[in-house]
Length: 307
Image 1 (cartoon, helix red, strand yellow):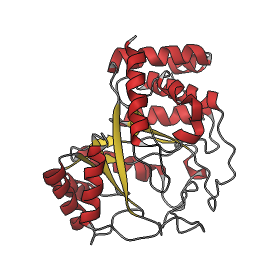
Image 2 (cartoon, one colour):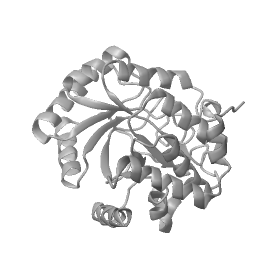
Image 3 (cartoon, rainbow, N blue to C red):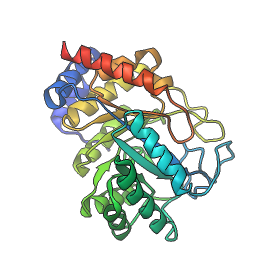
């Protein structure tokens, strides 16, 4: 099922310490001491038609996730301003659902234009599976990047979601690129997948030519089918981060949801393995660390990288 190039197979055979050394060397050689932050807003929550087994916002599961319609322009503008003030270089509007309803598309486009004009932060969107035409309209409004995770490998994806296909996600990425948007796409570690699955996803991301890769660690949330999923071993997470850096040496590897609990006291180890960016200010339904703690961490990592 899995046929990897010989160089990838050789990397997978390396011990963790050597992988991390190579991952850090690749990060410094290709990206220097760069460290970036992005931030998101859960702009519409809950009642999603899709059955992604990690997600509390799915209507298929009984959870305590918040449920509300699209937030108004003033709330989103205020959140964008806050994101800029806490040091994020990008701000993403995230909405639940398979895609953005036609009636909401012009509303979101107007909000994007206002953020660009009034706040001056780069705007991303994570609005589900959209068509080339819909994505083009949002780009014209000022959106510069589209976020659309693969979530898992092609081989493992049917164990994560069955209400849409892996190719649906690939096609959305291609549509975003076709209208000139950069693409942020990654996935979640710790959903029961193997290392082969994680590498397969990395190679697909490389083949797609994505511009940024967010790496999430599963938060097993009550009410979801993955609620009792055993936590992924720390060594496996660090191996994955180093391998992703070696497979994609020139783009940001952004730690996102789950980093606080999955990595805990070993957060710095991920950045010594090749990661170099973070999501700041919390996630869709889960809180994060204080922004000032993340900034202090970034400054310390940059000092270490420079030694």
